[in-house]
Length: 256
Image 1 (cartoon, rainbow, N blue to C red):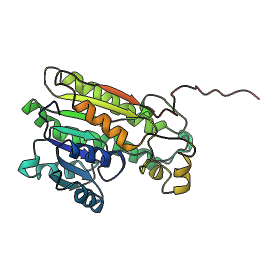
Image 2 (cartoon, one colour; image 1 turned 90 degrees about the horizontal axis):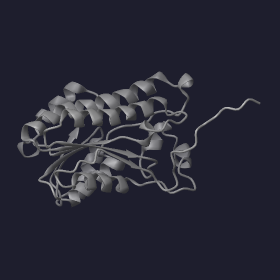
Image 3 (cartoon, one colour; image 1 turned 45 degrees about the horizontal axis):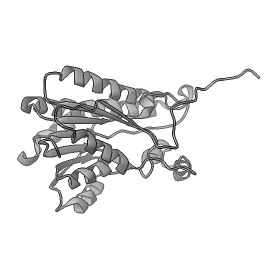
Image 4 (cartoon, rainbow, N blue to C red; image 1 turned 60 degrees about the vertical axis):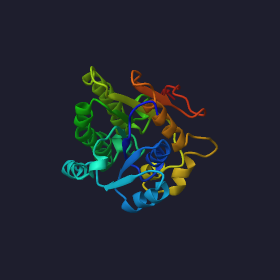
């Protein structure tokens, strides 16, 4: 690595992109704080990564502000100075149009994708500024840039992530702390669609039929590349799509 980063905290580390990022950073020599709600998944990941990487796991719900603060305040001394924060935890729930959406789905997405990310950032950022060292990588989505049917609140939460990233960069001007927003398109080999379709494996698998989506490792490589740039280089936004995907194609409704 071209920077003096040593310790990384990854949220949503138990599966998908978060798990891939943890493996990538372990290969880069980082100490890791791995955060998720499923302890057994985190423990299995640690067994895979050690002894290559020194790891500490935190089982907590990022929507619980007090719980997040207690968890981070209780970090062992060797893991307290977080140099890289990867805000990966997030979800999509439901595909219905807004007028038919389930309120609980909207509430869960806003609480997780916006409040959860904000809770972690608010807890970690002051230490980075105090040490004048750090990099926050937010995992957004192309859904926050390009609207699509059924994407309503999910897309809005990811638009929040992008604009929040820009706001952080503006506020941090004059410090060495860097901000990156990585916006992936369709990513397979993860639980994203399974969660979105409420555990319906058949519907989730159909999303990727006859196409080749991105895989979590590709996004993990993007994270590693952003944080490995020279200290005077900040990759603020990175939009990544599978070759089979495109943003074009505005919808119209024709009179019949």
